[in-house]
Image 1 (cartoon, rainbow, N blue to C red):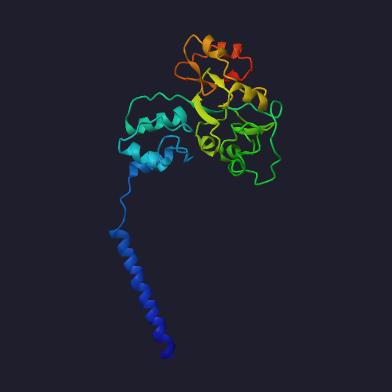
Image 2 (spheres, rainbow, N blue to C red):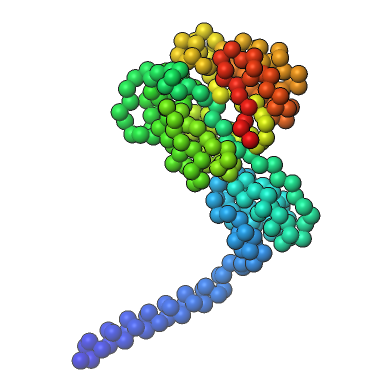
Length: 264
């Protein structure tokens, strides 16, 4: 009996000492909690998208608690969350400009075709590693849905081979922006705004060979714009959201119909 009892007592004693040591260590080495940051974290939507420029909701909350950041940087939370945090911190009203994601490609199956039949992993990140992806245009959307999988709000769907974003559902979290391996998605202010649905940097003749709707850099939009908001760079038109008034004149003169106004 003693031969059994003694080892049991020894093991139990070691366990007791180890537990006591861990308990003491948890008190001595405890990291102080910032209650203000924790309360702010509870106010945030918990998307952890990084659109605010911080590592996630907890990182943004910590910066707000320390006064190192301003309310209103959380796109998914919008004006409601910004107002709640501002009130909690005792700050004045904060203006929040809503942003939404747009896909800078219109090359659906109606206007372009694939250069090869892709039978690999159904992921844009995987497909792009094989000769730049199956799309004829090296800058075009592959339509395999990495952005769809990244979106937490059901705002993106693949239509006829191209990603489409519903601005009414989009929260501007930028998760889809990070997910697109071809960098075709960008955030723009949610207001009447000209959007060029093409990212091709090829010369017009080459673009015309692979896509019937791609921007050919004709510069008609640039010459028409009265606000100096649109310029042709790298053979395709680029809109400056800060200057664009949403008049729509560039869309009217575009011979390729690749410019439209953001649907607000």
